[in-house]
Amino acid sequence: MTATARRPLLRRLPPLALVQLRLAGAPDWPANPALAAPRFRTQLRPDGFTVRGTIQGRRLEVTVALLGGEQRWVVDGRAHAEVGTRPAAPGSS
Image (cartoon, rainbow, N blue to C red; front, top):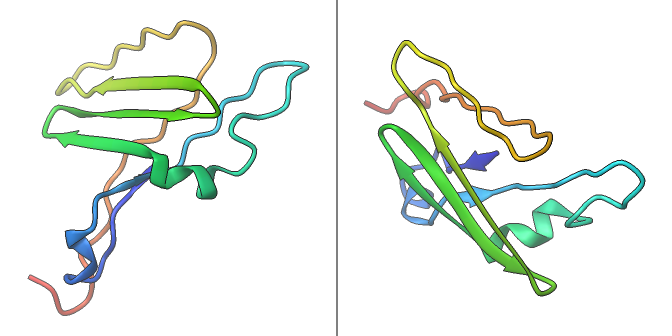
């Protein structure tokens, strides 16, 4: 999940990606996605997003392409991804 702030001043901060991978029989990586979030960089595009980062000597790159009217997933293993938007904050335009 990649999150951005709702407050106008905080929107200047880069979006934070909360990533946690799970393999059967192995501990979740990273153990605490909130602590790892600053080490990931998210590039937002109108047609999707990319998350890149390195933690504990492991590199991760995830690219999500959003195709209008079409859904297609290519996953090297199992994954869960959520894509959505937030409603506008009250009083913003």
